[in-house]
Image (cartoon, rainbow, N blue to C red; front, side):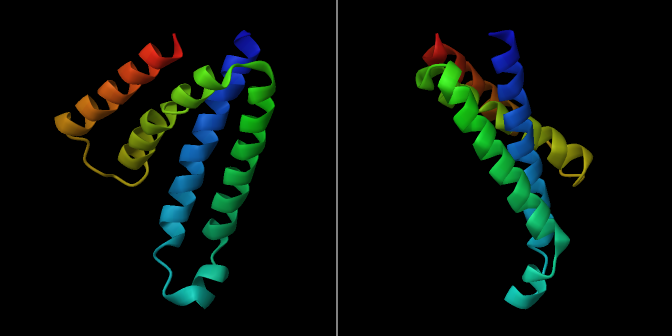
Length: 109
């Protein structure tokens, strides 16, 4: 069981990292430039890997547990946006993520 929870944590981190690469690719001017941006492909591959891990986890854990716990992606996203993109994390954002996580925990119980 602990192994599958660890895989779930990795899956959510991969999803957040994929979003980071796609955010970086979004600065491309036009479709052609986007198609030539390596960040676009890295983000897509990481999303695909996260999706495959999600399917794998669903084989062993209940859907009603896995889906709410995918909200861990919000924590990873906030951390990556702060450390990599240098975005400001406000108290309101932290409260919002805390409420989402509290709801996910309650639903998954």
